[in-house]
Image 1 (cartoon, protein in one colour):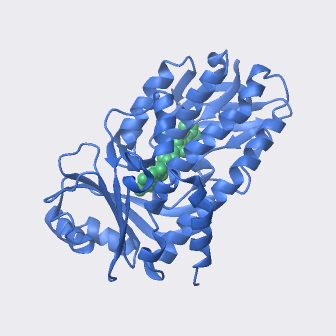
Image 2 (image 1 turned 120 degrees about the horizontal axis):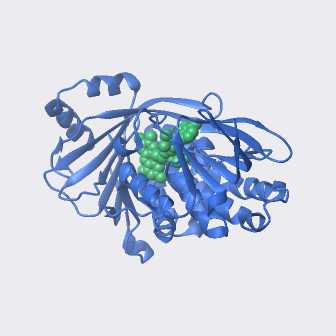
Length: 386
Ligand SMILES: Cc1cc2nc3c(=O)[nH]c(=O)nc-3n(C[C@H](O)[C@H](O)[C@H](O)COP(=O)(O)OP(=O)(O)OC[C@H]3O[C@@H](n4cnc5c(N)ncnc54)[C@H](O)[C@@H]3O)c2cc1C
């Protein structure tokens, strides 16, 4: 069996792996020495990328990055106002784009659209794309990594795991499911995103990329309740949704099947293992409460591409220094973001005043003001009452 040789092999052509492929293609004079290995079976959650029902709230930093690599999808709904509230408590927090002097706080895109636009850009980038059975890392030595995809064997100097698959058992099972669907509101509010904390988990009602009064729903609740909700007829589900969310958007009537995603926290201690490095969901899988997972994964890609830029000019050299730099640079952001979302998914729902802490989607806005990140984090963490 012959072996094909590459500088970098990326396992997984999800949004993170594709974004990395595009960034690396720009950083090397030999994009054909980078290979993107994409599995043709469905993802961890059981959906093919083109049929993945997720919608993603992305911050302004992610938007700028995706735009710059030609991966931003055509349809996106801007978020200009974020409304955070807590069921059973008075009061709310509102964050507006004008607070930051920016046109928008973030955007909502469909996972499937983002996947398609990134795949289109990768196809034109010169990067080799190999689609087939799930790829595998077989072994590594001091000079590189041996991989396989079905009968195909490959050798790469560095392998990047961007397959969305965490290593080992979850660090925390949230005992929550996220129910995803699309609803039409009878009194839509242009550019408003809502996050409502309930006893069982957060309920996000986001503007849908299609517009026209459509809302993307991400409803996190206890698994038994989620199963019961999923079994309801559409009319009964819509009624339960409107009752839990309240009447800020009038009534909510669902117009799509309800999909379920189990939620857990996974966080690898080390991003690198010799010449193998993990990014995106393969490195950390978060609760979706604050819409941070892909935003964080895209920051992994930007840092890894920057760390490898010099090495790509001389790929025969030892990449250990570049990979160590990546490991060190990513640790604070990964730890902080995983800690915040973990805390919010459990703590804010039940114990603390959301109004006081402005949690959840409000984190999207922090990207606009990095100086707020550390003080807010401290504030949130010091407010912990376990
Ligand atoms: C309900 C829900 C809501 C979310 N909302 C948000 C949000 O609002 N904002 C946000 O930023 N994030 C959000 N996220 C998180 C976000 O979806 C993930 O962080 C993001 O999809 C991670 O991208 P990825 O490319 O690392 O992994 P994935 O999206 O999982 O992509 C991995 C790809 O690799 C392929 N693959 C798997 N194994 C192999 C293999 N062995 N060989 C080759 N290919 C392989 C898979 O088929 C898949 O295409 C949400 C997540 C959930 C569950």
